[in-house]
Length: 102
Image (spheres, rainbow, N blue to C red):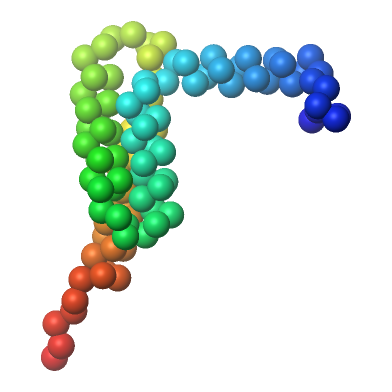
């Protein structure tokens, strides 16, 4: 941890490793995960991020399937974004849709 804004060589090495990890992931998979987390945090109140996350996640999975480059990854990130969005939309349906009385 930097002391008063001074970075150590270990900090720079960790930052470089994180940057390499991030560059190897598909950008649409990262977008899907971010939108999925946002959708879950808001409990699906805004439906648009949840639906967008599912669409973008499917697009990422299709593009990743076509590319045979093992350095380009992101399958798990896309699936996580899709799953979180689906969960948030299910929660939203239980919270906001009217229930039949009986």
